[in-house]
Image (cartoon, rainbow, N blue to C red; front, side, top):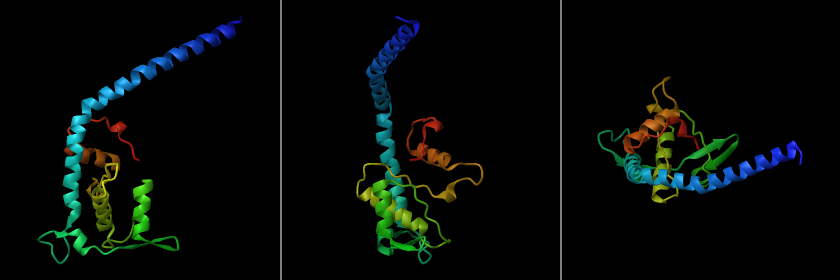
Amino acid sequence: MSIEELSSKGIDSFINHLNSFIFKTAPEFFITQYKKHEMKLNKGLPEYIKANYQRCAFVRTLLKRDRPTELDKIYEPLQFKIDDEILKEDEIKSSIATNLHRTIISGYAGNGKTIFLKKIYKELIDNQVNFYPIFVELRNISSGTQTLLDCIYEYLSRHIQIILPRNNLHMV
């Protein structure tokens, strides 16, 4: 047998042993880590959802600034223009909910962007989707000093008493 063949067999053997070790120990490690934080997540995420749901389900209007109004009672569906095509609100909502696309809703002040996103958030919770939607208003980002991920991290950390390394928070 040549040195290359012996070397190749040694590398193959090492890789096989490493794979075996990883497949045996990695699931246990991740299960242990999940169980370690599961209680905090199960407590914190529903608290976040509940608090944010209340913020989205009731809004202040120009006519009733002194007390919140139920969003569903005043909401009027929007139309969206993408290039030269006019899309109904349901088409946009369907795309966001089913494909989890990153979507940018832009427009002039007062056009209903925030209200539309609050409506989507509320509907996602009402329909019990299998993910946790996160609603953060961009106006809450400290100008020039904070990234969107930093803002999301800080917002969630108020509700979930768990310290996650910031580099583990990723955009979907």
